[in-house]
Image: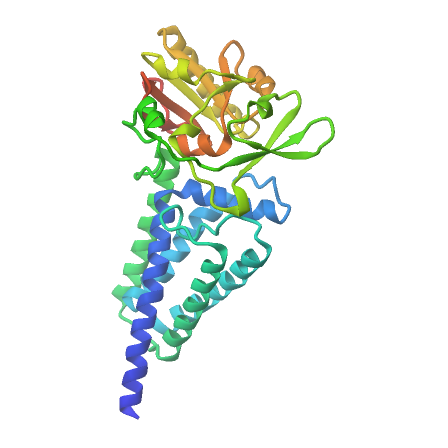
Length: 359
C-alpha cells in the first residue's frame, strides 16, 4: 500500500509539474505581447457576434495572464496541491470545451494560446488540452492537502510580476519584437531581401451592395474607399496570417506612397488602428505632437485602417494614408502611437499612452 501511495504521489508531482510548466509558459508569452492576446480575444468575441467590446478584451487578456501564472506557479511550487489541482482541472476543462468548438467550427485561424511564439492548428490545440486535462486528473489523484505558506506567496508574487509585465507591455510596447518591423530595421533593405510570399488576402465589403469579396493584398482595387470597406485579412484555408517586410505599404486611395516615406530624412508615422476607437484625449495628444513635428519641418503621415474621409475630419490639414490592418498591428503593437523612421530605418516606437512631445 505504501509503495502504491508513493508511486501515486510521484506521478502526481510529475503531472502537476508538466501542467504548471505549460501554464507558466503560456502566461509569460502572452505577457510579452498582450496586445496579440487582446486581438485574439476580439476575434473570439466577433465570432459569436459580439463586435463592440470596448476594453473588455484588454481586461480579459491581462486577467488571463494572471490566472494562468497563479495556477501554473502554484502547481510548480506545490502550493495547496489538491485545491490548485481542482482549479487547474476546471480551467483546463473549460479550455478543452472552447478548443473543441474552435476545432469544429473553425471561427479563428488558430487559438493563440502561446501567442506568436508557438503556433498550433486548432486540432493540435484541442489535442494539447486533452493531454493537459488527463495530466491534471493524475495530479489531483495523488495530490496532498497542504503546502508550505511560502509556496503560495511565491505563486502570488509570480502572478503580480507577470501582470505587471503585461501592463508594461501594453503601455510601453513589448520587450521582445517578433515581427519584421522592429527598431533598427531598415525597411528598404528588408523589403528588397524579402522573397517570401505571405499568401495573405483581404476581405472587403462592397458599400453599395454589402457583398463581400476577396482581394490579393497587392491588388489596389480594394483601396477605393468609395466602393469598398475593409473587413478582415485572411489566408487561404484559415492558416495563420503571416506578416512579411513586403506588407509594409502605405496608400492614399490607389496611390502607393511607401517609397516616398522611406526616402525621407525623418518621418513620423502617427499610427491609429481605428480612428473610431480613439478617445478624444488621445486624439488631441496625437494631433498636438504631430503639429509640433510639422513645425520642426518633419514629415508627418497619419496611418490607419479607417476610411480616408474619417481621417481627414479627425486630422485636418495633415497627410493621411491607409495600411493593411494586420501589417499595421505588426508595425505597432498598440491601438495608437508614433513610429519614427529615418531614411527607412525604424528608429523609435511609442504608444499613445506613453508618448511625449520630445519622442
